[in-house]
Length: 134
Image: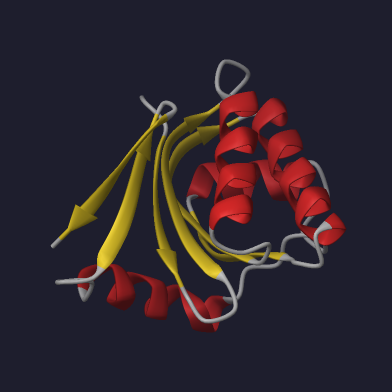
C-alpha cells in the first residue's frame, strides 16, 4: 500500500496523519517526509498513525530517527493515535516509554481531520506534494 500523509499546521506543532505501509521499502521515504514537515511547518509533530497498515523494524527505526531529528531542532514527536500494526512493533521492541500514545488527543485528531472543511491540508504521496483546499 502506498505511503501517504496529510499535514495540518497548528500554532506550535504540525499534525500529521500517515497511512499505508512503513516498511524497509519506504522507511527512508517516511523519514524524509517527516523531515520535510519539520522544515516546512514545525519541529514538533503530533503523529496520527492509525492509518498505518504495516510497520516493520525499519519503519520503527525511521520513527525513532524522526524523533531524534525533531529533538535536534528543539521539537518533539508525540503519537496521538496508532494502528494495531504500529502498537505491536512498538511494544514488541520495547520502546513504549519513548512513544506513549496521548490517548486524549486521539479523538481530537479524528475530529480535526473531519472538520477541516475550508482549511488548507497538505497531501503527500510518495514524494509528491499538493495543497488540498476543502
